[in-house]
Length: 366
Image 1 (cartoon, rainbow, N blue to C red):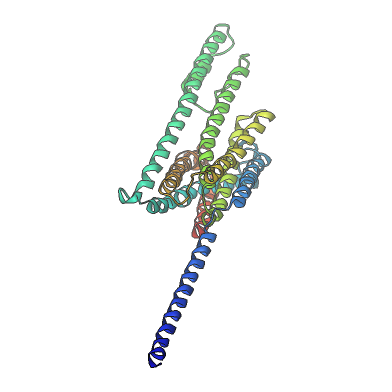
Image 2 (cartoon, rainbow, N blue to C red):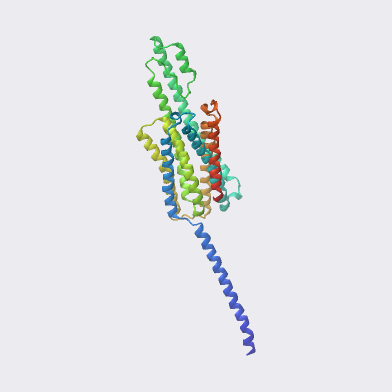
């Protein structure tokens, strides 16, 4: 009897220990479920993102059309200052999105995949690949534009010589045409009868430039959308805010380029539609890829894919912001560099800083 009484406390202790272990295990399982739910892939959010990004893109280009181009606004008016502010914000958003929300975020998936053990700076490597690709696109764009302008100037010089032989123009007019073949606007020939043709050719060069710029933007928009379509809930929320700002301000910038090219209504409509849909199409592709059979969002391959896409898209945007939009609109802008007052350049650079600050603050929750 004594042996039974002595054994009972041991049995009670064992049972109590098992209950405690089960409770701890159950608590850990609940914690894991909570973490998984917080960082789960939410298809409904992704579908909402398709329409959010589309609306931001349409709003950006639509507002740009409503404001009009720089040439239509007085250089000292409030409208012109507002345009410079918005364009500056667009540049700042593009640069900050590239550095903080794409390249900066690419380090984590490389670490999760273990790929960083081989080389820790992979995001910078793929970002440089994106910058290199964007540089090639820009070179092709400028090569085609400049060669076409040289050809136009040569043809116009021939027309001037013909008009000159008929006594319709002077030698100074011919020199004026051939002196700077890549100028933005070829000089007009008063009363020569050949003014309309050179002007239309210059406009054709602007239109081709606008198409090439939008084409390069559409390429990285699809990649950015695809990358966004692969993100889980914890990353999606700050990223959709960042990309919405990016699409809005970049859409405003694209709208200015389209206005400067003076496209017809239907061509404007087509370019607006392409810009507004490409990022959303990329998101849909990402959703289909993530929800497809055999895709594991936590696998090594998935993490490497997200890291590579983030880095390449960041490189594309960084080059576009630093080497295309910022120099052309502010740093080396002919009109701003010759301005008597520093008010307009200051407003533009303040806009750039404001865009950077906005996206940097959003990056706190990224």
